[in-house]
Amino acid sequence: MSMTEHLANFQNIINQLATMSMVLENELQALLLLSSLPDGWETFVMTVSDFAANGVLSVDFVKDSMQNEETRKKISGVCTEQMESDNQKMEDDKNNTVIVHFRALERPKEDEFCLELLIYLTNLGKISGAENHTYFDVVERVAQHLELDDITKIQLTPQDYYSQKPKPNPIKYRSVDRLLDMLVNYNQSSNILYYEVMDNPLPAFRVMSQSIKEGHIKIKCLIFLTEQMESDNQKMEDDKNNTVIVHFRALERPKEDEFCLELLIYLTNLGKISGAENHTYFDVVERVAQHLELDDITKIQLTPQDYYSQKPKPNPIKYRSVDRLLDMLVNYNQSSNILYYEVMDNPLPALQCLKTQRVSFRHATKDEAVVLNIRLPKQSTVGDIFNEIKTKVKLSQPNAELRLLEIFYHKIYKIFPLNEKIERINDQYWTLKAEEIPEEEKNLGPNSRLIHVYHFMKQNAQNQAQVENFGEPFVLVIREGDTLADVKMRIQKKLLVPNEEFSKWKFAFVSLGHPDYLKDSDIVYSHFRRRDGFCAWEQYLGLEHFNTTPKRAYAANQKRCKFEKPVKIYN
Image (cartoon, rainbow, N blue to C red):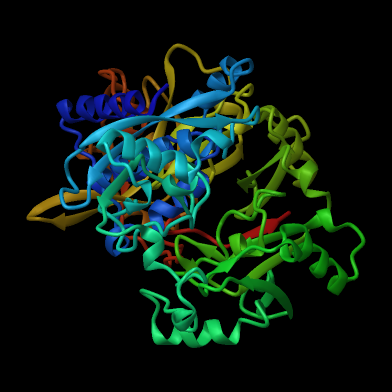
């Protein structure tokens, strides 16, 4: 499915909800749209969250970013599902093309012409340079279109991914080798190039060559370089190798430097940092392993630092996913000299075939919750998660049955079937909660039903009372003749709420955010008989009371339950 189709389907769902008077906030729509992305988009999700204006996501910004990211994946070769199917088709024909739009620099919003240029796809789906789309091939094709004899007078400028405008600095003559280098920068891509026909050949704007008369050979004027860069270049004439001090911190102690390593960075005569053979990914982990006196370097996992939060990024560097130290330290033009390390119990190549799920488990007979980090092969199912949980915690009885809930914004959005594959479960934004199934909820008869029960408060916003959910949601079985008084007794017993506090609670049938308050004599079952096609999380039994549990702070991109009891964490 293309990104356009994905966005259209999402918008259809939003429109259907709007026809039912259920209007989602713009930021919530943006978060839901991000959470709908498949595996492999985690880095994109984090990047979009980092670049949100004032830390607030908008659905239009997310949609535009997703469409741009799809274009980048097609060019840079990140394996989306569409490209994986395309690769099968390209086994016998590995040459592909990309349509590049050329615009005159003085008219940056209008396409002047388009050229179909060759891109070479390897059998891994990654784009690499081929001899037939070098820098000179591109400018030669542009010159042919413009009927220009001297190709050295053509100056090209790439497009800035974020502003969608020409970058301030053009591509210097012969400073790139391939078309790919013109279109992709820091994993962001564009299929637009801006051209300008100069009065003089581009080499005349560079360092004066030795073909100039002997009287001028000592000038060597460097056009467009600052005085500082000129002095730096003079210093680097004899020594172009420089070093950077990288601070390494244990991931479990992210605020304390454990040790520092002096690693080599190669500086070109233009003062730009580039990768050299002596500071590759393997060189870095080997130096770390030597310091830690570890024999197997494949057990070292590194995590870069987030430039804005000054904390470890949520996703570590995958094994052999980067080539150079520079790629570990610089991301989207922002750099850091801090890396976090972790010594894994298994080699990284083996771990990458596994998936770790963070699951909260609350004991049926104890007012205590634990958080379990469960690592299983990606093809495992929810049933395998339950088997792993049973080895880590003591259940109320050996044959107890479990269920897994997906919770978001203090609502239960899904109860997973046993055969659900864990590779399809996203726990980055959604909280996973496992619990024992009470005996009364097994083998429900035709006159019984499971309902959702949520805590809520009423907040005044824009002169309107709005329902705000909080706390830990749960499910409850109700029967056809149950009154609210009967249900209240079971809820108080389940939540262990003192009588004095419980007497202040109000109970309501909430549908699409509108509470309908109930009396003790009301039959609860009758309110849930008709569903009218609504989702289960939009029709629930609401418990209205003040929230007395202290808030727990989360990172901006982890909008999980804000009110929780203390938990224990087990790996």
